Length: 119
Length: 107
Image (cartoon, rainbow over all chains, first blue to last red; front, side):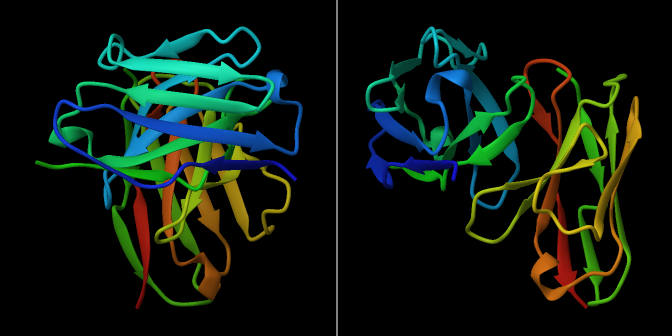
């Protein structure tokens, strides 16, 4: 069965970086893109961007460009998303999710990774 | 970015009730709309895509309808496991945008 398993919760200081790992199983990894969405606890969702797992090319929204690095490892079926220069406003649950086969909607989600930024 | 407005933000309902949640897009998105269910402390789960197609394994009491700018998610007879927060999301273009959510609470 399709599964996305994310790394554990993190606590970081302002100005630091956080890396969230997303390990996929149960399907052909390079056939589906991976999206990244974050959610402030108790609030709605914010789209961050996505990565083409075949080419490794990332496509992140403007507010994250320059602050995000994504690494795709097809041998371990893992996508790592690193967010730099953290502020308290980056405190959120970070989700990876698989795109459906047409690259449209998100059909399977990881369990989420809480990143807390606090001084 | 396309704005997606969901209503109501919360609903107090009883098991067995029929529930309708509305989602409105700020421009024509054809049928590029998905609905997700999120239970407390859990990741979202896909319920409906292409506005009206039920994801495999989703109970038939859930249904989606609409196109262009106006969409609805209906739960025909609410069951106890349906108490959760529901979100719509447009995938017509980037950035993908979500509604603010509708929380179903037990009356």
